[in-house]
Amino acid sequence: MSVEKKDMEKIVALCRRRGFIFGSSEIYGGIGGFWDYGPLGVELKRNIKDAWWEDMVRNPPIGPDGKEFQMVGVDCSIIMNPKVWEASGHVGGFSDPMVDCKTDGCKGRFREDQLCESPCPLKPSKMAGDFEKCALTEAREFNLMFQTHVGALQDNSSVAYLRPETAQGIFANFKNVMDSTRVRIPFGIAQIGKAFRNEINPRNFTFRSREFEQMEIEFFCHPDESKMWYEFWREVRIKWYESLGIRSDKLRPREQGEEELAHYSDACTDIEYLFPFSEETQELEGVAHRGSFDLNAHGKASKGKETAFAVVDPATNERFVPHVIEPSAGVDRFTLAAITEAYSFDENRASPEFMKFHPRLAPIKAAVFPLVGKDGMPDIAEPIYRDIKKRIPCQYDTKQSIGKRYARMDEAGTPFCFTIDGQTKEDGTVTVRNRDDASQDRIDKSRCLEFLQDQLGL
Ligand code: GAP
Image 1 (cartoon, helix red, strand yellow):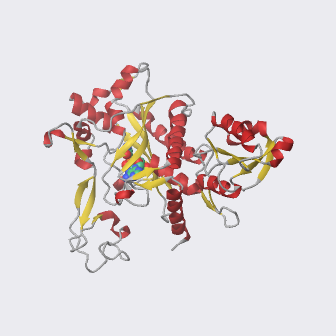
Image 2: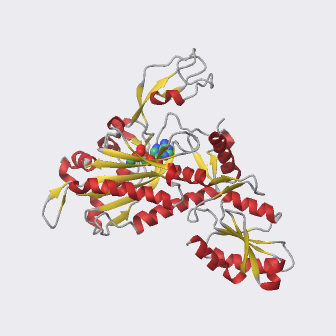
Image 3: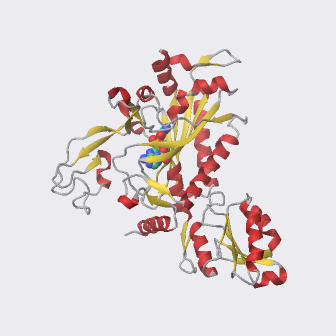
């Protein structure tokens, strides 16, 4: 087994042990492709979504023309009128080619394009199709949308879909947003929310799940400027991952070949990351040039005219259907990348496993420990903890030895711990312990919050 593979197993074990990620409904044997985030995982995921919203929506970067642009948010329903998915092309075309195995006792179902990565259920040492007993069918298209019914009647007239992407809620509300706000081209509409895909082979922990979250921007611009904005968003999004601690040598922008492009895309760059479960980089986010495909399609299907959602340039009176650049990121994929990037192992440390999260992402930013639960130490520690907790996520721990408390915080990825000890009573200083190198220093007990704000840049 390669070192990388072993690391992934350790990472999955740590995620479970420390409450980052659990299998969904594990007490009943779980369910493939669905995951639950535990107390640490939910904070990490929230920090990721907050960072994205803050950096992309509330405080977006300056545009390539040196000007500010507008960005607004929406939060749309998961189930929409099924006509949305007919117009968008998902009912007809959102499918993967799938093959079944007819061998008795197997009944495996595989993506045709992933046979070489799909172990045979009867003989896992071989890949599907390679074992002599495999009897694979011809490939047929399998639509990835989950179906449900709306209302009491369960027939064709009540079929609806769980959205497979958040993007379409944005397109369906394009005119509502234009009419109800003062946004003008170029501008973006952003959304964070759940998406569902009945993936044939969910795999690699949370990487390919059946229920996941997306952070999507649909950026509307003049067709003549769409190339400029496409390049701009590609740059912005790569830099954003780097700003949150993802090493640039593990990130790779990959321009999709024509044969790979989704039905709506004129061009697409996948921002890929080197996860430990693969020797090749894998998609973290897609930055797609969707042209006017979606506004045309919804204009035609809902209003009978492809140009129904055209806008007018007030300066030139030109009427045009905006082009769309779409940076579409997976919350769960970035959460997994942040976890694998943070995972560190140093056998020379008392607690060899530690999570080097970027300060903005760390689920807990600080911890306060009285060395012992007596001698007046808790009386000094508690006010320090309460003071920090008002501003910065902080934990208080009095249980077990100080070494074990540091180890717990290392695994949670807490950047700094403050320990109130015998010396605190003599000179008013506390021990500050740094997660990354396990070094210890002393600062005045009145400076703990200020120290954190300085060090973490919060
Ligand atoms: N609106 C465009 C769109 O949905 P996509 O490339 O299919 O494009 C965008 O998905 C992002 O959503 C991906 O880059 C990935 O991060 C995330 N994603 C897609 N399918 C996923 C799955 N099955 N499990 C986890 N994340 C997924």
